Image (cartoon, rainbow, N blue to C red):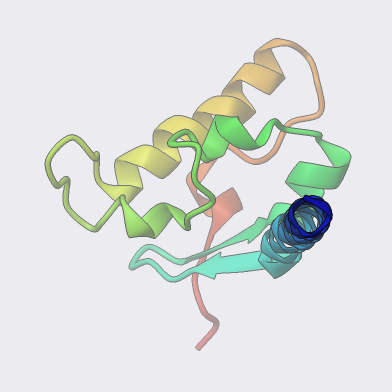
Length: 128
């Protein structure tokens, strides 16, 4: 029976080691996903480019990720919101105006520091 006990101890040790390695991989994946987010995005649209500072919204304004990433997944907005509405997803333009401009409007009403709300404050046409 001694050989059976040693085999069992070995299996338990391997199981613990595998669980430890798996937990390291999961934690590393979470940090890699957070690190992968760029600091600033530029949305190229017909009315003029819109710059979005992701780092500012996360670090300074402290907006909950779920406010923008409402599906619970860390996807870019345009993965779901296309130029025209598709299925249940509203168009990118409508989503940005509702969520981004809407959030800025709410902040202004609450007399908090707010981002731009006028068209030309967000949309910047390239200089010719």
